[in-house]
Image 1 (cartoon, helix red, strand yellow):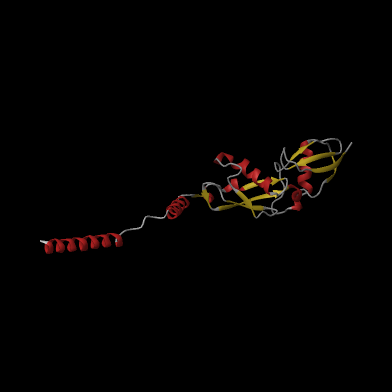
Image 2: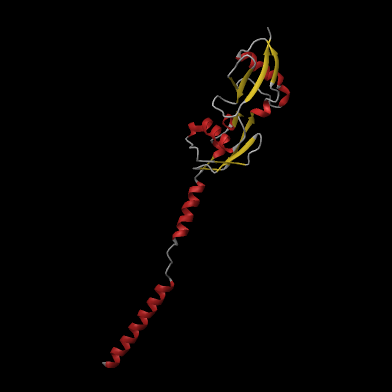
Length: 192
């Protein structure tokens, strides 16, 4: 009987050891949490809409700006496209020149866009209007456009590119838009 118990005990230990060994070697390690997060992030990136399909055409043309600093470009782009649901801090302006800037890193979108603009001081280079028949807004506007045509022949200044304020008997203030900080003073003489 002792021999029989010893044999059964030995067989039981060997079966138990073999099944334990098999269970340990077939074990699949659990996924690392960082792998799961990386996969989720990649899925989100794959599902992002490309900004080039949302901001197109006229939305890329910012018009005439008071200058080409980053904040002015950001504000003009935001104001022109706020109906798309962007916030001021949802994108980054970079690589700006005298006529364009790259806008990228849109929250919720992939890709980048190039916006185009003109700077007022590069369009209105002649500020002495000479003698004009009167100091009305229209007369001053037409004269500014006429004498500055050659400043940018590929994209000349036109009606609506600027506003004129503070008109008096011999000068006026020209701005890219009504609340712009930068301005140009034009001078003139009114004929009698």
